[in-house]
Image 1 (spheres, chains in turn red, blue):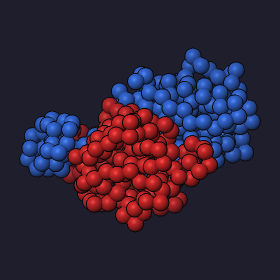
Image 2: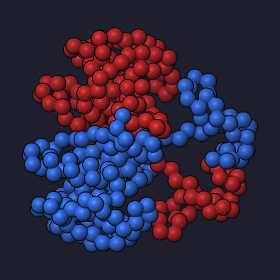
Image 3: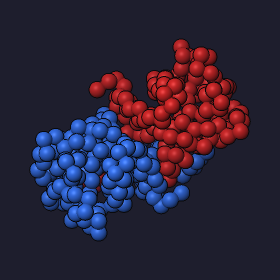
Length: 178
Length: 178
């Protein structure tokens, strides 16, 4: 941020506003306080029989690596509808959400992952615009060394653990650990 | 947003960027795309014996009404540490988080509530800077008609239902309903 988005002034300073307790970008010309907050990454692990659906990324970062369909939550969306949209955009597939499995904090880059487990409707999928390919994997076939993000590895590990125990637990973690 | 925060140009237009599928504020001068995304409101319902701790708001909106300690998640925080911070700021109290009880989507105002249940450490609390008063309530004493936000009512109702059933369920909802 080099200029105030409200009045266009370059006179921005990092100061603690009155009544606040942390520094913000404040415009000296018009007094607008520019807050910045973490973003939600929403996603869903689609399940079909004993397999899960992963997508190989056609976009940076982590081009060419595998991922649980996920992306930034948009304004005007619920976390649930964003998760369904991401599965559609990345895998051309529809899911019926089952339960929230992951709350994963990436504090250093201000991202909060919320990922669901869902049923892949009719076992049907394609290849979304943001993917090189999409494929169903059994647990033994998961390309663990070619996963895009730690959040996806976390969700996959916890999903198979949940499946073994017959429980639908939410798992929470911070990366790096608090 | 009236000016580009990167280059200061007023030449902003709502257009769908190449490879995107929804309109964004894009600067015609420097091509910066200005994304806007929902914010997380994180909080915790502190529990002590058969009571819960609520705070009466000393700030707008909903000045004078009761609330579950909650507020915007900050950059560099986990959802969990943000919830503990809010309890400290609003009720001068420490909590040990127990479980995530609420994912509540307020899509129309781009807010996603994530609220925990936690144990009020030593039963101690005060009055935070953002509160007029704080108090412990049994279920029968909750001031239902003087609650600040629908999210708090949702969390309180679900907490007492969970307590009766002996389960620690996560509850999800959209307001208004999808």
